[in-house]
Amino acid sequence: MNNEELYTTIFKRKSIRKFDMTPLPAEILLDLQKFAGQVKTLDDSIRYECVYLENKEVKNLLPIHAPHYICLYSENRSSYLMNAGFILQQIDLYLSANGIGSCWLGLAKPSKQVLEPKRDLEFVIMIAFGSTNEIVHRSDTSVFIRKSMSAITQIEGAEELLEPVRLAPSASNSQPWYFSGDLQTIDVSREKPGFLKAPIYERMNQIDIGIALCHLWLSFLHNGKKAVISFPDAVPPDGHEYMARVTVEDKV
Image 1 (tube, rainbow, N blue to C red):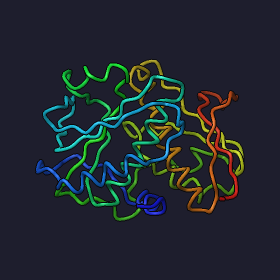
Image 2 (tube, rainbow, N blue to C red):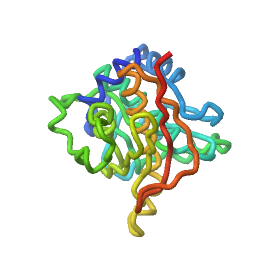
Image 3 (cartoon, rainbow, N blue to C red):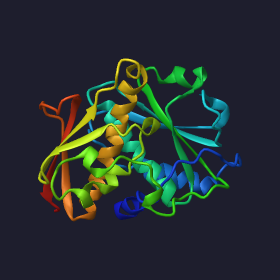
Image 4 (tube, rainbow, N blue to C red):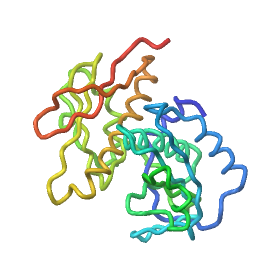
């Protein structure tokens, strides 16, 4: 599967919460593992591992049960949460593109028996996936419940480029991202969560930014450009925290 197929899936992807508990065929799982082994990362130096679990190996506070889960474990280093979101969103789009239901799970964890052998890496987050009787794709972008473009950027002429990013999934649909700068250098920041929301969203919204960066990277590729993502120090808009910079180059 190529990046253009992932890009087109953005406009119809949706979260699935009701799964058929029948396991997927072994060849489908093998193809998924092959794809997951070659995805792009934000930082190649951050060690991570994808682990595949069954329903009995997962504890979830929400009543969502699936036959399969993909869990991401990572070194706890600068930008590792964004890196996790960036990686897993490619896998989420791959699943959707192949007609497989999927759902990000922010309140689920591997069982203690699964966590123990991974002490050198931190569990970050997981995606549930499998067959479903639900319709896997949205009919069109009008059914997405998202902020307006003017609420996430004031960059002139960025509507087409940022529309895939506007449609990105996020924890509780919080959509924390904001884009400033211009079409050559885009600064990405996130809304600071309030005191009551901080215990959950402080972590989850950093993963969300990684998801948004994945969509932005795919959008630039679709437009024949190369996006170089870095993490310099910069001043964010009021009420926001600076997260990343995306510098645009002509595609090589």
